[in-house]
Image: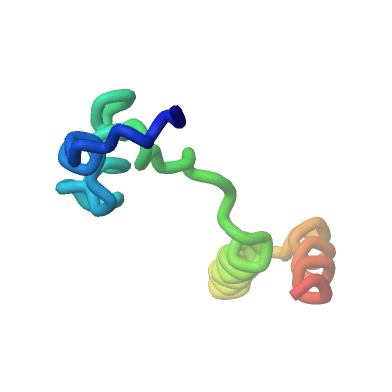
Length: 91
């Protein structure tokens, strides 16, 4: 006699083809029971700003400093001119 030869209908009652819970609900319940939902949504730490933004801001700072030195009648340091040229070629 085979395993399912003596079916009385109890098998279908205990093991329905379509479970009462949807698959989404089952997975959701499993995730909630094994870990906290917040731990799944961890944001990565803050990284670096893009190089072109840093260079652009630095160029603005150098330009402003050069303007202040010119207004004050001061000699512009060569390092500023060199850095301005290098950064300007990078962008």
